[in-house]
Image 1: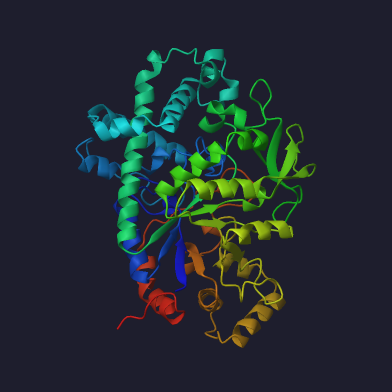
Image 2 (image 1 turned 90 degrees about the vertical axis):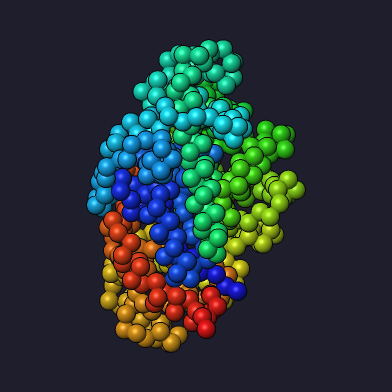
Length: 486
């Protein structure tokens, strides 16, 4: 049966403490999603937010951001006093203020926590040790990028092992504690969703950030100079979003080294991610075929070269070493045929976005089952704002097409949501902001830009969603995406 999904970042879900967490409000969101009939909940990366609060420039591709720890659940465990509400009605996330508010409660919980055998087993993982040391040293260095640390032993600890860690032990253990709490709270939330028939679609960036525990601890997997600085960086050439391309700044992988080591970096990363999510959406999938390689000295992404990547060898290795791997390929943009061949060789669902391909002559969104179709993703404006910006001629053309397909409620929003759900796509996912008919203020990110208001949108109440669950369920039943109730 075809499936229906809802896209909603955890951070954007209402909470008492200014940013969505793994707390009761998110459990309520899951209840509403199940009531509406959704079988997929797609989220954004949960990794520690880096530059610009972007989940695509994280400090680690394994760790989660401690901003998601539910303070109320820590209180229920008896680890902290009950925290008062903070920024509960704020329509945007003030990350700095939220972190400052939460910090004393997290330290109180750490002080009251009694380690057990499960905690010990968790803390023994290599990524946990690397990340915890990395973050303790980042704090000691004013959160500057590790390349700017003055102490050579701190900067090169993973390479030389010369640093005496005893002075940092308490801060390291504090980081371990937070990751353990995140893991426990997330596993409980995920199980709650699964028990209600909802799979979690996680999202992982193709690249990792230069200022990350991944690069700091595993420099041989990247093209870096002797000081650890990127020789080449990632991005994409000029496209729909930017006339000068997108210069992301992530270091480029050393694929030759990775092949020699049986792609252990990717095998370990995907294997761990598979423990957290039911489905893995890989952002920028096209880079497994060819990636845009920019000299680090270039100020824009205009000047670069396409380089082939060993995608088939990598995925053959992944499927040989992991079981029940479910991957969705983010394959948007102007791609060469080989990208689609790589995707189809492994039967990965691709993606189609209505905002890019609405009319029949624009793509095969209308008759291709093995794909995931959206109104828009985290990089698009809301469908309501997108429609409002169209010319009158474009609006008439779209409405005429919808009428020709049998959608004529005289509400473009209702018609386009119904249209997406009635496509032949195996999965249809619509952001909650679109279900609620929200405008530009609910846009999550504008590619090619950094900082506010990107990644800051949040809901202050789920009441509007609750009021729509019955109508959504009726639509999903009509579209054949859930069984009709007797």
